[in-house]
Each structure stands twice: as structure tokens, then as C-alpha cells.
Length: 137
Image 1 (cartoon, rainbow, N blue to C red):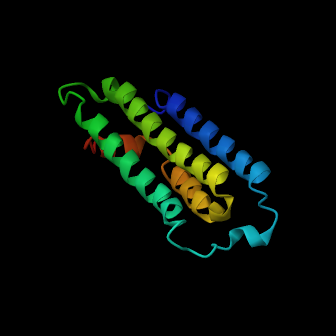
Image 2 (cartoon, one colour):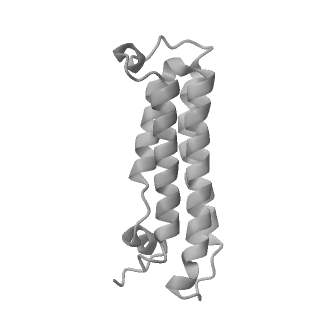
């Protein structure tokens, strides 16, 4: 099973590495000043909503993709659907992190929170089984 999940694990690793490198290079993470949240006013509230909406939308689309899978399929036959759903979820979160980096670098802390969330979503066999409610190991 782990061998069949290897492509999505590699994709996840590549997305994590790419986004981290982009934040290191473009986000100037060497300065401690970048880790302070700027003053929040009505014009910057939309930048606070980007990560929140990305998390909600990515989880909603992820769960909708998994619900479409035929329950009669064997667990191994569900792997492509899991990969597709995971890629959609990761793409939305990655896009939101890049939006924050390019549109409002002052809110780089929110982008780092999204990166940590992406890392947390690392695909595994246990997660795959849990998402399809199959507890047999």
C-alpha cells in the first residue's frame, strides 16, 4: 500500500519544498521584523481571510471528491481518487500561500501558518484509510 501512495507523497514533498524555498528567497525570512503581524485595518482584512477561506475551501473540495468515490471499490482502487483530492487540496493551499507572499508580504506569518498546515497534511496510509473509513491494517 505504501508503494502505491508514493506518488502523492512525492508531490506533497515537492509542494512543501517549493513553497518553503519561495518563502526563504522571496519572503526574506532572515529578518525577525517579518514575523510581526502588521496593524490590521479594514483594507487589510481581506488578507486575513485568504488563509481561512483557503483552508475551508480546500477541505470542502477534498471531502466532496472523496464522497464521489464508489464505496464498492476495493481500497487499492480508491488511491487515484485520493491522489486527485489531495492534489486539489494542496493546490488551493499553495495558491493561497503564494497570494499572501506576492500581494501582501507584510502578512508572511499567515503564509507560514499555511505552510505548516500543508506539512501537517502529509499523506500516509493511516490517513488514507481514515478518509475512506477503513480501519483494517
